[in-house]
Image 1 (tube, one colour):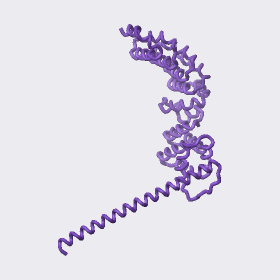
Image 2 (cartoon, rainbow, N blue to C red):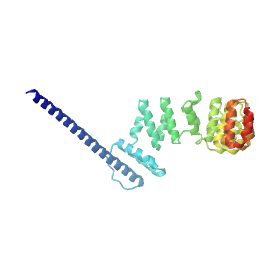
Image 3 (cartoon, rainbow, N blue to C red):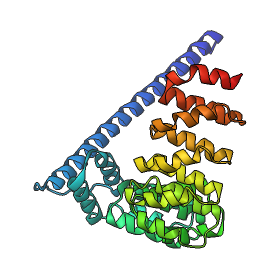
Image 4 (spheres, rainbow, N blue to C red):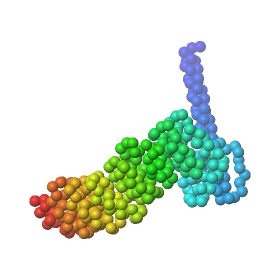
Length: 325
């Protein structure tokens, strides 16, 4: 075989190899599209079946559908349903055993798997899911996992009473963190009376102030007297928390102690009082805000000017210029 024939043979082999590779790629693409099409048809059939079952129609159940495929379909349907339809879908999912695998993973020895399972349980929020989340919050060996379960319960409005929540998370044995504060705010609308009862305990200032702050998120106007008493507390941190809660709650009677707090000797309390005056639209605070434009603290002067710009912009011109001079 001469050199020319060797070149032709080599070129032919290369061309054949490229052709075979191209055919393999085409075959792979065809199989992927075929598999995707079958998967889409299966998912559509599962979705249609569950929607018909939720509506009470007669359906021929197919036992060949994998549990993961059912779980994926329910995850897509769930955000589209409300009220009774959502409840019925979750009940059917439990009867089908769709959530069994998620519950099993929530007992995994690996923390990551347990946390991922908690997110699934949070998304579904059925009675069985809530029960399992409560069990995790009460008994899991890892504090981070217990905290994840607590937030999952909070998102479903199913947190236990505040005293139990703090006991399970060992909250009273340490300073409150931002996560603790978020949980207190989520608990307050569910148990406002029990939150007030917590204040009767022998708590340190940090916890007491955060509980008072959380009461502002309760939307319960009956606790306004508690905030009024807290606004006169000897601790400035608690007075500030009472002002934040009063502004958040929005009760007009809070103007009484907000106006008094504008003369508080502690800078942080005066700042909170200025913010509350603006948020509650307290027009009677304008004279005191004008006085605070000449306060010895820069931040107080700036916040007072901002509040005046909102409440009475026409009052700013001459007095503020004089105060700055």
